[in-house]
Length: 401
Image 1 (cartoon, rainbow, N blue to C red):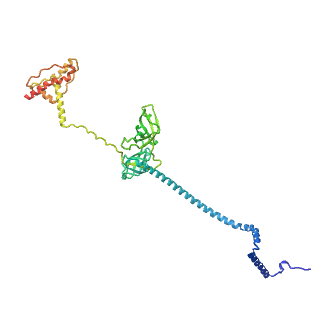
Image 2: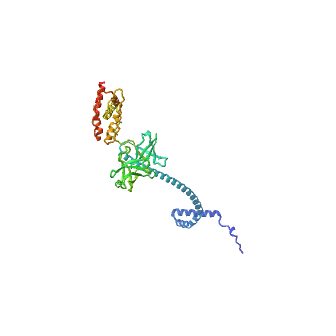
Image 3: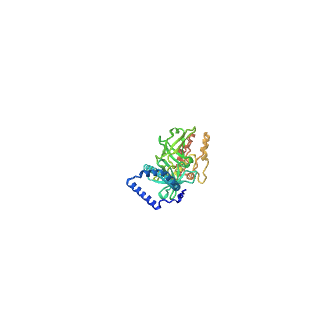
């Protein structure tokens, strides 16, 4: 019975021989593939068969690389998103700033056009803030005494009148809007020239035409444009003021007209201050009160003496006897005669000191004969006629003395 050795202990060709054999085969295959491309098909078939095995073997590596790429790309994307958001905010701010600049540019162009249309010198000003008083309609501008701003100067924009300078500081000035309750402006309707005065209505931001006669409200219509009439000497004539929004005809004496100002400060911050007041004709000089001099006073006193001497002598006054007091009875004689004739007695006018002196002077000649009493209706004008001889006799007596 034959026993063969186990396969592990079988001895074949030596390992050196095997290595040499396989090396020669490899060299031959390399030469055949390099020279004749004989193994190209075999290589493609083997690569196709082994490709799934290669992919399965590379899965752990690809998974590790994928996880690393995921986290790195996530962080980079988050950073990119943050950068884009910041750029978007900056772009939005730049866009808003550009829009603001465009609006200001358009507003400044309109103000320049209005500046060319308005006669006289004007000053560009910017609104700083509203006044602190909430019950009034006032704003503060960045122009003051240093720039030549004065009280009472009108302030306008490209659409119409805004208000009037009511307070001036060295570097700022306060402007009261037309809608303030204490403001009023003379206006006229552009369509028919009807004149009136517009008053502010306070917080409502509107104007009102007060004391418009009921028959004149028919001449005012909705959407009528009101312009300055220039009668106040502050606002130049022809500036737009407001648009009529409501007309009410009441049963009373006056109607009610409500207007909306055309100018406004809500959409822009630049205004024009009219530095040159409107050209108005000079006012006539005031007449001084008449002051009479001493000569004219003396003439007036002489006239009064002549006028009062005539009634006193015409009443029947007789020259006084030397050394005796003047009689008072003749002074009341005309009143007694008038009472007897049925007419009311008139008190004799008071005599001046000069007349008393003439009456008290002693007469050298007999008194003039009494003349007839005139009719009652002509008692006042007849007194000077009877007084002329007596006064003339008294003057002659004084001359003879």
